[in-house]
Length: 357
Ligand SMILES: C=C1C[C@]23C[C@@]1(O)CC[C@H]2[C@@]12CCC[C@@](C)(C(=O)O1)[C@H]2[C@@H]3C(=O)O
Ligand SMILES: O=C(O)CCC(=O)C(=O)O
Ligand SMILES: [Fe+2]
Image (cartoon, rainbow, N blue to C red; front, side, top):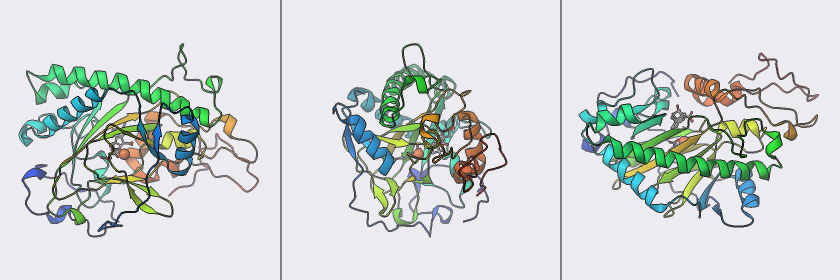
């Protein structure tokens, strides 16, 4: 597949397109037309006393699970969904006022990974890092305050949940507070400024040849995703191919990201996932992308390594890794992988000993 970046689409008004333009036609989408595997992503009840065991098993085998009884108020999810719908149904000229700048990360636009693909994706997105104020003000000069308050509330609740999930995941690996150096005074994991990614996938006139969001792993420790009741998210499961994550009302989808893959020394793998589209229904998803504080160096936890299991990755900060991902996309993880010789000894400071490609 060519990696030559496409010019940005002239306009993003997918809602008005009656036919799939050639620049959106992915003739070689694997697994299409999708018959769909009958496998099901594990569903975990956070109130279950055995949740830690189930979370560990799901992270090890799937890298993703659906979460119920997570404690996020249902009203908050409903309000976020309604706000996302309201945002994406604004006229295209209005949305473009809040467009992501060419060298920026926040704002309205195509998926940030679009430049790595020869065809356009059938989606539009809105990325929020830090305060949404500047962009929201351009979308709704008078009504931005409610949106900003809602986003702050969502980030606060998601941070609490992400922290709880991280301790469950780390606990399932036998990791305790003393093993992590980015723990705050009350035992909370200090977070980096998280990213919120709102994704909109309009109904598509030719869904079998279109791609909503191309296959990728997230750079995060973990991602918590709310999807509306329209299916489209698929995860790759070894031996089964693409498995659709069936929407369950009120459930959240949690997936392992590349930084957790590194932290766990590959015990928990980041999951490859993508979003497909359909002919009749609009789909919306909201991803909370959770990472560590930006200055903390993430490397395989020493408790998980020994002579037989040497560290497989060199240390990297969240911002360095995002930079590598933005430049090299799906090669990013292998670019921070250490070359492990047969005797298992690795010089973790030898930055030249990486496997490229
Ligand atoms: C913090 C971030 C993770 C992300 C890049 C970003 O700066 C903001 C958007 C995130 C997202 C969402 C869609 C998939 C993804 C690969 C992308 O292109 O943008 C992720 C990025 C990532 O995880 O690297
Ligand atoms: O829309 C989806 O279900 C997937 C979104 C996603 O993978 C992302 O925002 O990183
Ligand atoms: Fe993703």
